[in-house]
Image (cartoon, rainbow, N blue to C red; front, side, top):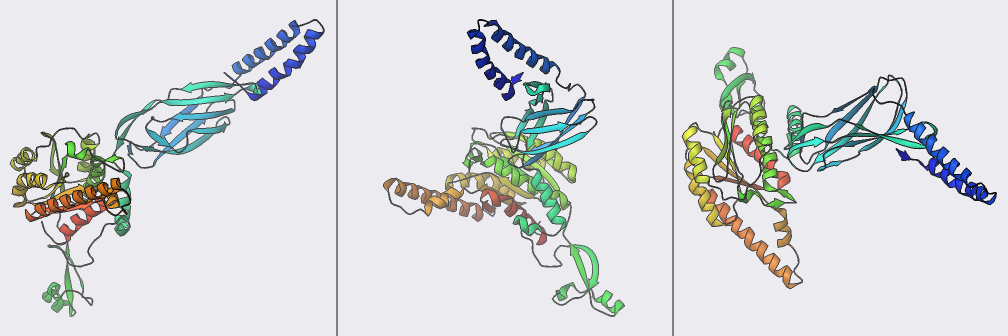
Length: 435
């Protein structure tokens, strides 16, 4: 029970009344006045509308996306006979950033209202909504009554699932360029025959089907579609190198967003997708399979991954993979290396696979390094800082050259560009039939 402003005004009004009562020799009247106000307030609290017939539902996606705005809908239905006027407060998990938590409601009998707000989870994992609170308006307006609704509800936070929906929508509309994903404008790429169509200016003469052209009396060209049923294996290093942060977010989290976008693109294209997670040992292995169900399996496998303070053993990890998968595939290794020695270790582990598979090492670039390199030096600390950034960038460049010289493709991009750059590379591989 919470006293309102009206209650305190009535209490304050009793002060001059008490002074008059004391002056006339009847101080007990002031006590009676205050007790009367308190009793009326308590009585009005008991007369508050009942919420026993209030039906509450909270609706949201089965999984929420980390660092993305997720819609939460609260549905309230009043099956009682009294109007419920209250202040409602929903309690999302503490690590969620909510656009709004409190709402004023005026719910008449047999009516339904919907309230909407958005939350942005800051970390992956399992969380819980803590319940919902109502502060009811009571008759006479002297007090407010607090009521707790037991609406606790578990929720799982995954990497950015919402980005996959956006990818699917833009792909259907032919607008993937809006995500920064580049696709070739060349026609007729691929090796699987799809259909015949009339020749148009600019078509490759090598694609002309002369027999069909003779039958139809006009030039006809063959159209080819990209090959399906190819193999993609995504490898994630969750060792200490992935604990570093970029813009306050660990590199592993940036990698998982890119990995899911890549998995979705491959699943939509009809390819087989597999997963290998390793640190000092192999932690998880999912053999390549095709279909949207495989996307869900991979999402479940990576949503709770945490970078660990251990030195990774890529040699053992890729030896494990080579004994379990022989078919030529696109192997993508999400890891990090900042010096030539680390690059040589990776090429020693990953290099042998590059002779059989199309191999790519994918790493997150920290934009702060370029920012520091481009500062105008005016103090000694700035001079040292710029020198350190320059040396670090040179080491990363040298390490990248070592990887490339070993026949391994190297992709490095800033966090916001990593997923689009990776999917663009994948489309390039498909369009050029490099697998």
